Image 1 (cartoon, rainbow, N blue to C red):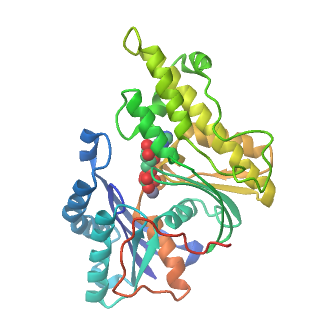
Image 2 (cartoon, rainbow, N blue to C red):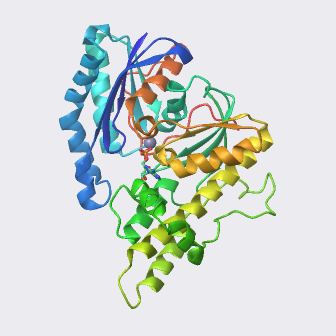
Image 3 (cartoon, protein in one colour):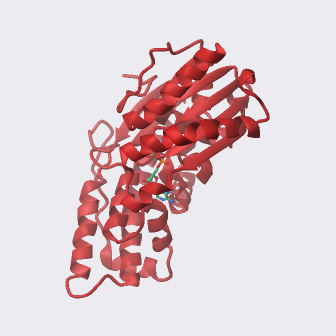
Length: 353
Ligand code: KG4
Ligand code: ZN
């Protein structure tokens, strides 16, 4: 089966062609057009994102078909992100997918964006399949899940306030670094001397205490807004009499990243231990953070679990993962009707009570 995937939930216009069955499906093409225009505004402007998707989507899809060396009539099904995300941006992809599916007379399926992220790593690493513990960390979401099988998810923890990527973006802004903040903070945190200087700024690990027990509401949940405030106070103290120096900026970036990563790693290890999993799969834009992957791999090795992280290309928003999640649902006989809508928030399908 050849599935055309379409993703327009935020600021990437992406199309992909996936061919094959189940976990053996392979990426035939993947085109990701990032909307750089938002850098000027320091964050995604929804109206601009929608308009940019309108302009880009047709050429992006044509390019993905050309790269896969197929034509429109070779498409067997279409998978499109229909939530969660920016409604105007999602609607561009959803409307396009419906029109194309109708014109070609092929089935179409709406895909939950975060379920797409769950499947991303498996497209590159054949062993990144259930059962596993999943940590999805993106600009809009932070989810810790136990994945017993594809389509069978247990939500263990989530953020109480800011998503992990959002925390990176906001802290980057406080430090005068560009958007998106994640890669900029990671770069700063790796600067010479940053690790040493970060000791002066050790931030408390948010919502991480030894006395927490399974069943406690905060055992798996995370919260990053307090950490962001701690960074704000550190920046204010450091700049009360002079501008922020490069070494201080790097030290604060490092201290922030250390606190956030340790929290994510420890909460993930709790899930691995409770459910006896041997694999941890990371997903979402923040999973592109090499320091997080290294810390997670090292800590999980001590509980005999192996960590699978996607390449940067598949960690970020992309249509290949949407095609893969869509293929899973299509193979189960599911279809979306042509009245499929877009939703800013949407419950993850397959959640156990
Ligand atoms: O999954 P994604 O591409 O889009 C959403 O669905 O939100 O994630 C984007 C987020 C941004 O907040 C960005 O700052 C963050 O991922 N990010 C990173 C890194 N690369 C991207 N965060 C930390 N370290 C990185 N290397
Ligand atoms: Zn995403």
